[in-house]
Length: 77
Image (tube, rainbow, N blue to C red; front, side, top):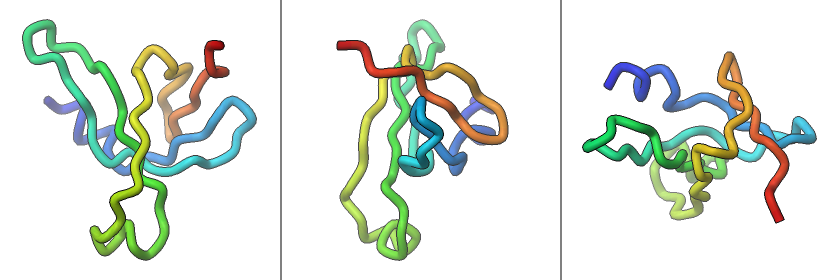
């Protein structure tokens, strides 16, 4: 899936433009060919060395915009 190559590694910002991490992986529903969630690594040296287990899963519905960076919508209460 070409979109995966384009998204992995992009910075993710919350609705206040605060960097929350970078895209580490993507969860895909292969039956429907749709992205279900983004897996975000927290960053830092341990992340770049592959030692960090700290990641966040964000449902794809929260993505507001994808460009040079990925911007998320406000969290739904």
